[in-house]
Length: 94
Image (tube, rainbow, N blue to C red; front, side, top):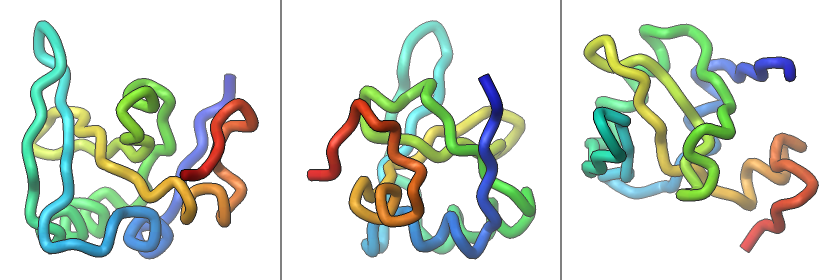
């Protein structure tokens, strides 16, 4: 399977437009937390590219980027993901 990446600017358009956005990391299980949107945008810019991942897709967290050395899965707007043509065919935008 190929890995898909988006730019930091594209990733910004794929997350919800709220002050805080839900994220997950995986350490012996899933750990969730809300993260300030501006912190996520800074992480996107620092990474340069953001992975569109299936690892946390069951939680609707399709974006993945390294934050503090950990792969962090970020809540994703499904309608925006579908608009970019990145939503898997088996999923439907809400």
